[in-house]
Each structure stands twice: as structure tokens, then as C-alpha cells.
Amino acid sequence: MRFASNLATHLIAGSIVFGIGSACAEIKDGTIRVLINLKTSCNQQALQREDTADNGLRFTIECTDKATYPDNILVLCPDRNSDLSCEIVTRPREFKFLNMMGDHVIEGTPGGHESREKE
Image 1: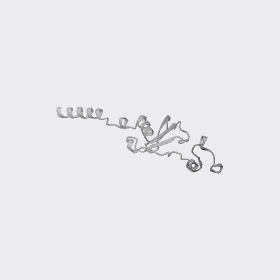
Image 2 (image 1 turned 120 degrees about the vertical axis):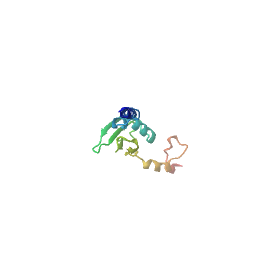
Image 3 (image 1 turned 90 degrees about the horizontal axis):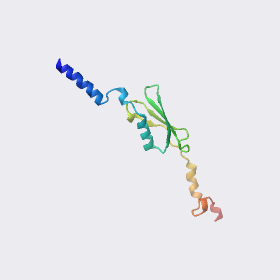
Image 4 (image 1 turned 45 degrees about the vertical axis):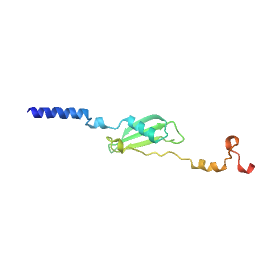
């Protein structure tokens, strides 16, 4: 009898200390904010959390950088209890035509916008 009582006490204490339970292990908003800070150039303005139909989590992050992320950032976490399952779905917008302008800019001119024909 005493053994069973001690076992129950240790199981309860262990579950409290190690955070066993779905409420304790669920992904926190702060974890998603850190992920966005490390992996993107988004200057976060707001974060919205939603449940998905398959019991996962969906985060929508609004950025102040509207040039790179005009439609916000979407992060999906299929397993709501593991931040390792989270993936940034939104890719940054690229402006490839800006790279082509580099061939037509003359260094040393104010603004560098004169064409090469005027040389």
C-alpha cells in the first residue's frame, strides 16, 4: 500500500516538473516570433494564431516590410506540440529586374542613373 502511494506521488510530481500534458507542450507565440526573427527580414507588427482542421496550428505574421512580404508571412505547424514541425510557407518576394539594372548604372554619377550612351 505504501509503495503504491509513493509511486503515485512520484508520477504526479514528475508530470508537473517535466510538463507532461498537451497544454504545457503546445507551441508558444514567442517561439514563432523567434523563428521569424532568425529566418526572415520581417519586422513583426502583429501575430495571429489559428487552429487548423487537422489539429495543427497556423500563424499569420504581419510585417512592416511590405516590399519583401506584402501579403504577410504564413507559418504552418502540423503538430501543435512540436515546434520542429513548423515551416515558414511564405517566401520573400524577389525583384529580379533590379539586378538587371546593375549593368546600366555608371559609377561616380549622382544617383548613378545616367545611361552609358552619354559617355
